[in-house]
Structures are given as structure tokens and as C-alpha cells.
Image (tube, rainbow, N blue to C red; front, side, top):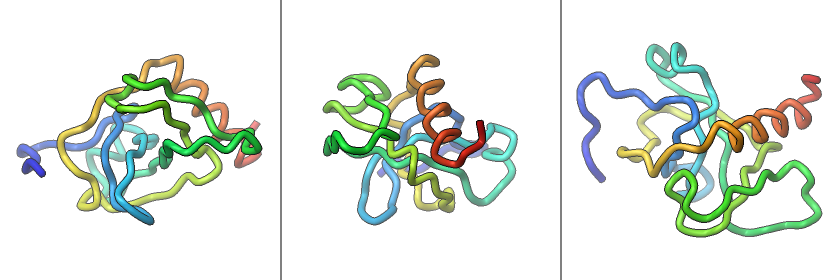
Length: 113
């Protein structure tokens, strides 16, 4: 694990390995203003196990965001974690189109639409 540089903070749309129920990738969802100043960030966990019955899982194709296999964003499991639980450097960044689909999934899961 590399040490994060001075002034580093996770950016919205980046994918990192994080410590949740186990080490897994997660998307940074919170805004960069909060990410820069707060001690914790809002994330969407990512899994490589496909469950067809979960309509709130957004597909992330292998290679996007630095993911090594096809994966799914768990839009129904948004959570916060301390920045200390994020493994630097980021795996990658999601495309704007995929990020928008995940935002839509989170809105649906939380009845924000």
C-alpha cells in the first residue's frame, strides 16, 4: 500500500480498494468539497458477484475504473467510511455515463426521485 501524498483526498467518481465487510473496491460518491475537508467519505460498494434479482446493481464492465473483472455497483448499500480505510492510490475512475447510472440507482434506492 502506497502512502498518500500531502494534500491528497479521494475524488468523486474514483474507485479505490476500501475496508468494509472485507477489502473490496468502492466508488467515491460524495462531493469533492466534502471529500477534501471531511474525515469520512460516502461510497458505493462494488462486487464481482452478479445477482440477477437485484435491480439496483449497476454493471461496471471489466477495465473501467481499473476493475479487473465485470463488476456491479451496490446502489442499495451506500455507506460512509473514514478516509483512513481507503487504500491509496485509486484503481481508476468511472466514466461519466457509468457514474450517472449509479447516481440514478442510488436515487431510486433512497426514493430521492
